[in-house]
Structure formats: structure tokens, C-alpha cells
Length: 369
Image 1 (cartoon, helix red, strand yellow):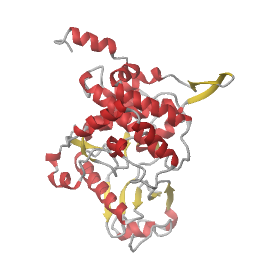
Image 2 (image 1 turned 180 degrees about the horizontal axis):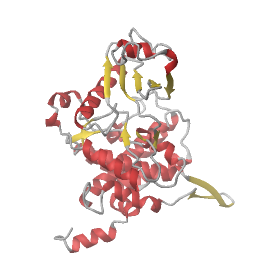
Image 3 (image 1 turned 90 degrees about the vertical axis):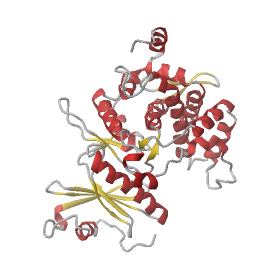
Image 4 (image 1 turned 135 degrees about the horizontal axis):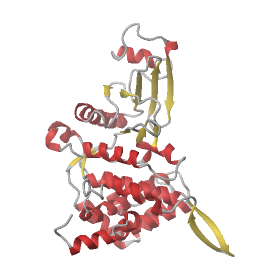
């Protein structure tokens, strides 16, 4: 990338001042702390003693500058219309490829949270659901210029079964092994084709929801833990069921990652959950989808939603295998789950959400909620 400024811990405060984000004389080099954040981009958090905080992300290539421009566009929409859903937009520098938003102090991601707990609290789940409801209320007609700039193409994983090794020579051996296994699953491939054909630009979606992209500030037992959504590089106008499916896939990914293998007899192994059963996630998942009040998701949506969750699970597995010479047992377990989600979405919904008795009741009494 041909830029003028390469961010470092030493020049970041001066850069922010030069962009008009810091007033003259309002800071010194010793009054701030700069922390690098691990990501594929160059990312930094700048915190000042007076409580101000900035999150700066710099692109490394010209292509990443275009991606950051898209993210900046989304942040501007969110700051104007949904200020509580994400950090506030502050600045985008297209020359140096730098996006600046407010930093959320003392925040941690749900990925870190899940390393310490065995379930997601209803308080956090409700906050996630509320933020997504606000996000999905933004329609293409509300921002016609942004609708032109933001992609409405379906997620690439809906065509993953049509990828060849020739087209993607940089794929690892593990990724190619996964692709070959998917392409052997005829029913799963049909489900992917059906979802790709039905994709359309319906509402604004994040596009890459995972526990790492949901951050919150712990407030203690009595307070409210506000969840913020970050990393909007893949935001577009699409189907809200994709965002919800991404989070359902996270539940299954979380479960599959907890499996450990035990040997029962000579050469006979079985996988068992390390710390929790999938049923332990039922209450949280139902709250996320607002099933009990029949709000965010109807039972008629579940088949599509869980099919999309299966596709997302495949996407996550392929991403994780990029540097693997061979797939791991956790990837294999997750891949088996993904194919089951694609081919038997209703059964998967019942497994996670315990919905079978409710579906039967509604079928018998269609006039009742």
C-alpha cells in the first residue's frame, strides 16, 4: 500500500491530533497508553488518562483499504442511526488507509468470556438480540448510496462445493481435504445451491458474526452488560437469518471444540463433551432467537436459519484449516455437524432449541401463537 504514514506507538497520538481528533495541548506522550491488537490488520488502542479512547485500524494493502472504506461506511450508518450497536465512527483516512472509531474501555470479547464460563448469560444474550434487531431494521431504501457501495452478494461459502484446487492454489492441504469431503455430500451441496439461489438484499447485516466480534464491559451482577458489535469489514445488505445462523454456528462450534477423545477399547475411540452438553445452551439460544415471545424468529424461519448455520460452520472450519496440513478431530466433528445442519435443519433446531413439541402444537392449533 502506498501511504504516507505507517502507524507506530510513537506517532499515533500525533497522527490523531493531526486528524483533528485531539485538541492542541490536550495530551502529552506520557498521558496515553498505546496497545497493539492482534488481527490481520494493524490495529491499535490508544487510551488517555482522562478516559478518552481510540481504536485505529490500518490496512496493509490497497485491497484492504477498499475493505476499510466499506467498514467506515457502515460505521457512519451505525453512528447516525444505531449509536448503541457499535463503537462510534470518528474518522477514515483513505490516503493512509486508517479507520478510527471510539475504543470501548475495559471490554472483553465473548470468545474470552467463553473461556471462563460454560454458558452464556441471558443478560448478555438479550443485549446481543437487541443490537441485532436494531441492525436488521436498516433497509437498503434507507441508505440508497450505501446500498450501491455495499455488496449484496451471497457469502462465498454457499458456493464452496464448486471450488476446485486449481482455482485456489494457496489453499492448505487441510482446507483441500475439507473441500473434497464436502463435495462428496450430495444433499449438503443441494442445500447450499438452494440457499445461494434464494439470497437477496433484504436488510443490513454484519456478515461475519462470531464470539470474537462481540465485546462487552462486565458490569457485575446487578448492572447491565452492554454488548457492542465490532469488525464490520464483511457487512452488506443481505438476509438477517445469516447473522443469526452465524451465532447458532458459534454455539455448535463451541460445543464441537469442547470434545475430547477417550479410548474405550484397543483401537476403539469415542468423542465426549469435555465440560458441558449441547442442551446447556438451549436457554441462551432460545433467548437469542426470541422464540418464547415469538418475536425475532418464527418457527417457519428455523429451517433456513439452521441450514445457513451449517454453511457458516463450514466457512469457519475452512478458515481455521488455512494453515493446517491435515484436519483435526475437532474440525472433523464440526464438519460432521455442519453436514447434519444442512441436511436435517429441523432436527438440529430441535436438538439445540427443543422445539419439536411446540411445532407440533402450532400445527395442531394454527390460530394460536
